[in-house]
Length: 95
Image 1 (cartoon, rainbow, N blue to C red):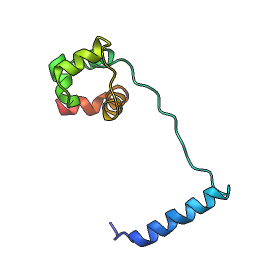
Image 2: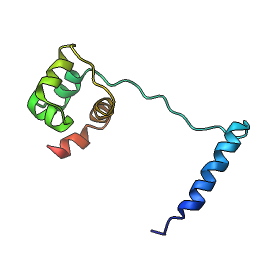
Image 3: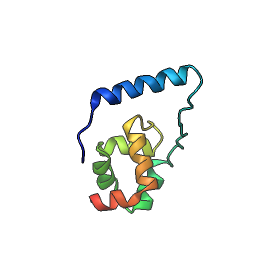
């Protein structure tokens, strides 16, 4: 792996911003879908609440709140649920 030239990368990024502002460059975007409910994902992975909560890095109580609709997953938890649903093999390797 070659050495990075951070200065050149920053300058390149600034040039891209300038081009975008002038309307000469389109940025790539992607819309992310919402994951299925946590309980559906957990059942698909065939995990107990305790095991799934541990893999998600949350308390069992938090997971129960999600599953019973008292709270909604936020931020990184949503991203982890999306990964668990779309790439269950990652979670299967962890437990």
